[in-house]
Amino acid sequence: MLEAPLLPSLEALLDYVRADIAYERAEQLRAFFLDAKTRLIRAEIVARGSVDQLVIHPREIARRALELGAVGVILVHNHPSGETSPSNADITTTRAICSALGAIDVELHDHVIVGVSGWTSMRQEGNL
Image (cartoon, rainbow, N blue to C red; front, side, top):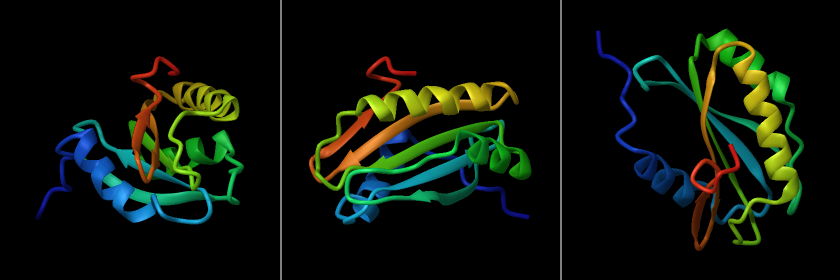
């Protein structure tokens, strides 16, 4: 039986996602659910929004992590404007997701915003 792939690096994952969604006209949030060895269990689009807004429900991400038996999550969403700096709403929502996941012992590894010009890690920016 083949094992699920290990994520080689955050950069490799982001190169793939950025190529896939950076040019989308509406925001979307993808969740990468991970096992204890950082193997990918499943990647899903968990929210779709408009040109400048995305409604995210932290409890739904936590519920899905429980269903899949995930112990880690990486979130990635795009900004159609191309600007990758997190908004105040991005920061507030990410912290709420981190709390919801933490309550069920699931780690939010990062929340990354991608755009045509690159990406910004909310963990590296100190927002997690």
